[in-house]
Image 1 (cartoon, helix red, strand yellow):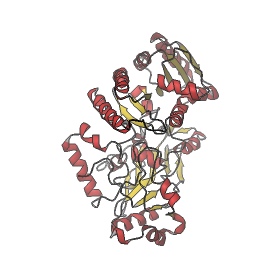
Image 2: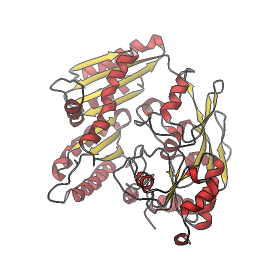
Image 3: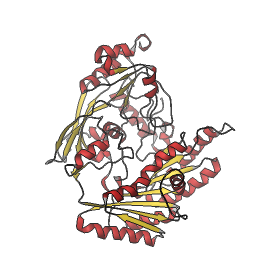
Image 4: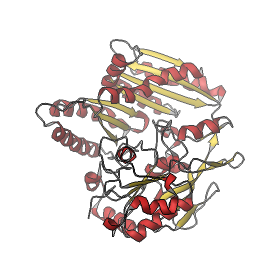
Amino acid sequence: MLAQVNLAALLERHLGAEKVLSDSKSLAHYSRDASTYGPFPPEAVALPSSAEEVSAVLRLAYEHGFPVTPRGAGTGLTGGALPVCGGVVLSTERMQSIKLIDEENLIAVVEPGVVTGTLQQVLAQRGLLYPPDPASLGTCSIGGNVAHNAGGPRALKYGVTREYVLGLDTVMADGSRLRSGRRTSKGVVGYDLTGLLVGSEGTLGVTTEVTLRLIPAPQAQATLMAIFRTAVDAGRAVTRILLSGFRPCALELVDAPSIDVLRQRGNHAFPSGAGAILLCEVDEEQEALGRVLDTCARACEQAGAIEQRHSTDPQERELLWSARRAVYPMLVKTYPRMRVEDVCVPRTRIADALSRLDEMSAQYRIPTSTLAHAGDGNLHIGLLRGVEQDREGTEERRVEEMRADLMRTVLSLGGTLAGEHGVGYAKRSFLGWELSPEAIALQRKMKALIDPKNLLNPQKIFTEA
């Protein structure tokens, strides 16, 4: 049936030509996301602006049997928005309405295309906070954050996206619409369908509206940058800080290769002996801020910090954070074929993981760079590859072997294969290394029940049965 249907023409009849893309330039754009996988060109791209139009697209898919790949802003790093099986990319980028901000009940109702950073700016003007803060918050969307249960530096204190999603409007595979969740602060009626949908990576439905829990913005904030000779020393500081009785908002670790990139391509100066940077963000009531900041600074000093800088001034704090935020874009410019792995280990095993990573880097001849949400053991490891492949032509094989070795190491340390980026297309083959056959079988049954024709984001999370 699919081969006999012109998907672009079919969609245009139901959405209008202005909401369908089929030119080669657009298809090339939507054939990739922020990962290094692809291209996987779709046959057409649908740009609905309402839940009714999303429903129309999925009804057509169910009737004609073509696959649909939901897409937010395309900032994912595991290939979750790639149309691996062709068909239609359904982008929610035009659904950008902030429908409600209820300051008294601390909730917001938004469409999936709302950019996370934009929502946070709007809320900040009202003294409110939506805590999840992915590194790409300036471009990523709420819908994509929900699909992947996004985290970020502030997850250490505030948790990840799932903790802030109270309810969802979702269009299911057959085009029907489902309302799940609530607008109250708690509720335990029936199964937690909202919790199931958050983190399902577009394989169970397409989000069209999100009800979010908000919190009051903190009264005061401070940022501390501590510089260490080694990542091991920085890890000791993390442990000391977390055992002090205070919970920082964020604890971010930048390793030596990342510092080198900052030196080479940025405007950031660090001592010659700098082998790791630890950024500590503190938010507290005004009268407690100084005491907590002093405690964190003392912990860093005791762990061997060779230099410390801190500030409560917003502009100075932003300058301290700019080094951390600059690393990934600079790495991408320097190593455009970089493969990013998102893993998580118990925070007491970060030093072990980094030590083993150094050994693997030498063994496979693949340089690495690590950025870590050190407070919760979440490591973002870049396998650094330049523009050109090596002359031996073995680089891709060595990268894949190193990835497998990394996953085995993470599991042996008591960790998990995906801290916040999801499984997507990139980690399907490793799923059985962490989950039992029984757990995978049950999840496959759930997928088959909700999407019996396997049309929603096929070949994501699971390999083909």
